[in-house]
Image (cartoon, rainbow, N blue to C red; front, side, top):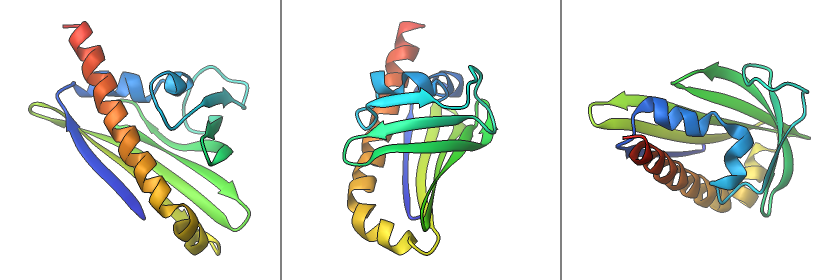
Length: 145
């Protein structure tokens, strides 16, 4: 992975998953996402689901889910000419909550350019996303206790 951020939360995996898997609601709690639109005409999320995600300074990109493991994580891929971006979102149960790992990987002939141009900003975005996920899951876990 080009960029990997790991953290832990006291929220149980099922609560973290309920926040993470509700992609349609990401703009409400995730500071790095301003809009999400399903572009595949479905209402259920799983392998093959497609979302258009709009982010500040990055614009709109289409993401296709390639791995969907409820309670454990998902992977999706966005393609632009010369570069494929793969984003992973993984959850691991721990005795006191959940370990979260978020990753971004750029491949293809333009992967090096994506790293050069977007690397620092993307690392900042991923760290911000991890912090927001932990905070939102802990708030949700606290309200259901």
